Image (cartoon, rainbow over all chains, first blue to last red; front, side):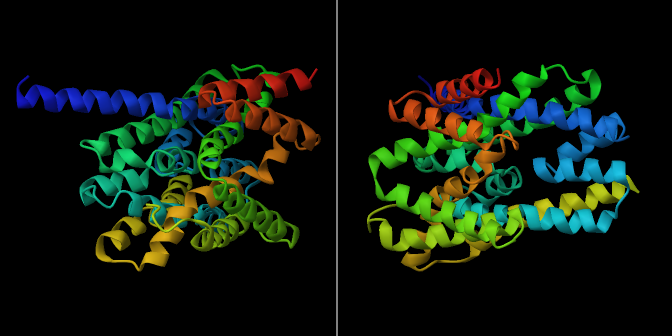
Length: 240
Length: 97
């Protein structure tokens, strides 16, 4: 095989692998995105506005909030600040993700960071070895593109077609992303039991902060940072 | 007006996402910070799962919990993530009858 052909076959392999790995995100995003599209339309946003919001803001809960606000007519600045608080957790996740991608060039890191969500981060972080492989950026790029496109197209579809998923089914599909997080976490726990301790510390801190009346956004940030700190003592030295 | 709000929200989500790319590029961390960063994914997964999973059906939190337990069992058996997700969806769907 020529060097060039080898190059492109590695690329295709990485894209395929990325698609297979990112597929559960599509399954989880589509029903939520469609619901957002329906709500935003009902709230009086145009098809262009609601799709543009998905493309540029790309943050589920904040977009639901904005659509609600649009219906009720509260302040835009309030929504922007709430969006920042709710999504600040991505700063912590992106720090971890970018550190995992140290060997990948900055011109790749920037789009990968911009496409980071809870789900694309979780899936990417649980597949760390591709970061050191040839064409690894394509693997992560495909995961992130799957998530992004299903979110944007799902929103458009919801705004265009209305509720196409029966209510009982779409409500049941609300468990999808949680089940995906569990499905990602358990294999790591099987490999190293102490990982479970880190996750449980984060859960308890998060629940405690919510009980104390903190907003969901800050509670998740707190749980993630403090849970991660417990990892300094819990994880073995040789982990990368 | 709404376009301004979209741009403002866009900046509010983009900046926290992208700034770390430049921080990591410029800085060399001590080992304990690297260890902390490598533990973040597990902590994030924990914080994202609980207590949020109880709000899948806000008036009936046990539906989410049962769906989650089914997901744990399926994942523990070594099933692919897609099957874990489908199993949990089916569980919550059946509980709603």
